[in-house]
Image (cartoon, rainbow, N blue to C red; front, side, top):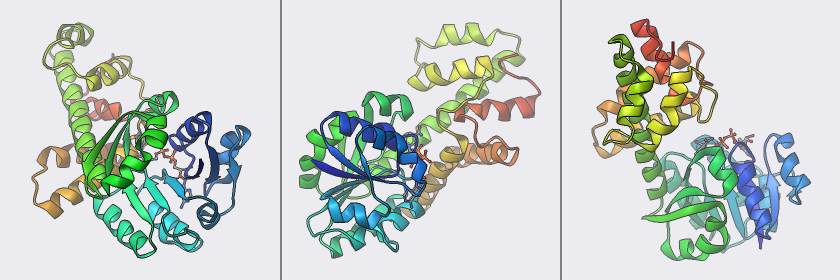
Length: 295
Ligand code: NAD
């Protein structure tokens, strides 16, 4: 199958590579030309605009940072909708605001383009392995059409969550749980350190019990080592929590924990730590308490 791919960054590049490995022809575009070099080396073809991607493909994937980028790529000048034929399927795999997914889908529908939102969880390692978790919103028949031959070539778990925007609402729920879980770990292990109980022993003692989690196993070792190489950057998590707070306000859903962790992340960004992994929330506690978990 010929598949258009827009956005060949940390996630998009390995996802596109997996589609190539599965035998698909990939037509690639990124606003930063150099980002497509590796997929082109592996058989993808570069075209210089989104419009040209759409002119050649009936299935197009976007993997872009946030809502404004997806709006530009789809609705902007030389954007995808200038080149699409009716019946084209657009799979937006970026993590964006659910309200913007719905807005873009309405514009797509006017041109006979079928859009679903399909954000992912799992980060670069799972994008490389093709074992992402993919959460999907939109028309169920369109979902069924792309599930096996496209989505399951990039992910190990693909779950249909409901109408358009439901994929991104699910992703926001994921990001709230991850952010609050990391903050709770940072708070708990700082307490252990202040109370003169070895945080390494605390980790060993509690990780197999109810408090244990995939987040704890992935992020506490980084806090113990005091190294915060991303992974998932604080700047990107701020973007997700901003979308989560907007969605909470729109729906009248309370989000006090999200708001507190958002302020911690904003403080870290103001201190120049926005490019750290989100486990760098531990630095917030270190600054306030004067104690590093990993000392
Ligand atoms: P990235 O910044 O590495 O890649 C985004 C790519 O989009 C870049 O190559 C950029 O040049 C390109 N781009 C930006 N605007 C464009 C436009 N108008 N037209 C064409 N290309 C454009 O980001 P990423 O880490 O790959 O993340 C992509 C999405 O996936 C984000 O929404 C992110 O929140 C989500 N996500 C990331 C991770 C992760 O661990 N990095 C994990 C899960 C989900």
